[in-house]
Amino acid sequence: MAMIRLLFQAIHLLLLANFTIAYTTLSDDGLKAVPGPGDDFNIKTGKLLAPILQPRVPGTPGSIAVQNHFIDFFKTNLPKWTIELQNSTSKTPVSGDKEVPFVNLIITRDPPWTTPGFSGRLNLVAHYDSKLTPHGFIGATDSAAPCAMLMHAARSVDAALTAKWEKMHADGMDLEFEDQQGIQILFLDGEEAFKSWTDTDSIYGARSLAAEMESTAYAAHSTFHNALSSISLFVLLDLLGAKNPTVPSYFKTTHWAYSKMAKLESRLRSMSLFESASKKGGSKRDDKPFLPESDKEKTGDRWLGGMIGDDHEPFMERGVDILHIIPSPFPRVWHNREDDGEHLDLPTVADWSKLVTAFVAEWMELEGFMKAGEEAAKPGREVEPRGNQQDTGKSEL
Image (cartoon, rainbow, N blue to C red; front, side):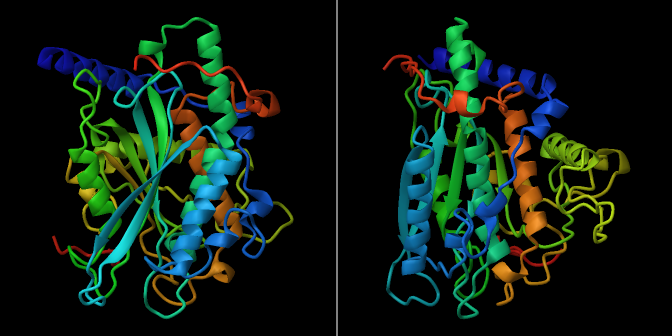
């Protein structure tokens, strides 16, 4: 049995290597089909963003309201995605002997013929909690807007995933080996420190979830031995939504993925599909790229991964590949009361949403399916499953 498990794991590594080499880019038509969020990101009435723009300290009514917003959105609009809650409690420096509850939301869509342990997953991650202080802190960039971006991305690729997987099944492909890649969205709780950032007063939800994912084993014959090992890439969004961000490439091991996203940004700009880009006859905006370091491996510049404390740390410590999408320098409004909806640059928020969606569509190889639209969204025949360090902690670099 051990030999069989090792064989499955070797096959997975080979498939992942081939995926990296044979990465299929979206065509221009595919990029044009990537939707923007439109009015759903209105800070007062937008269906995705507005409900998150409230204080949401762990264990408070605001936190519960935002949890319910996520759950209602997926249950109502994306019923093929599964929703799990991962709960933990911890004392904090300000709670005395009281245990504070933390709730992570794990929202997944795998190919319908797979069972747990056989599907690798692109993980899209943001924290949804807000800081205890200053009083009334919203955290629009930190990280209400990133959460809304992930909701938009999931909605935008859902019909294309259905169309792709149904076509594969209809074409009689050998599904066991052709496509074992799903998507998992993690809305993490308790990222913010209650008093000051330390190893124990920060990333409460991420620390709990990483440990649980590592310790919960899949069946012995599975491709992956636990949920942690099934993460093909951990894409963490944080502090996004301010004008003119600069996001470095933090990790040499995932620079190839950073470069793929940077290339998508460059193409979206050249095709005039970015709202924040300057336009003829309009107000002039700075056109510098969000992701300027696509050629960093040629320049020998230093890699800054590990210098920013964030939710990726307990996953990275366990060997997960990280793509950290966080600006440096941080937004001017970082950790002050001005980090609210009114201080978001909505064209920039819309552009991040479109860029993240394009990255997901390309990763999931949805070329030719993004225009599937209403036809792909129609209910189709489901395929039956097979078998039954104290660090800087968000301080400026």
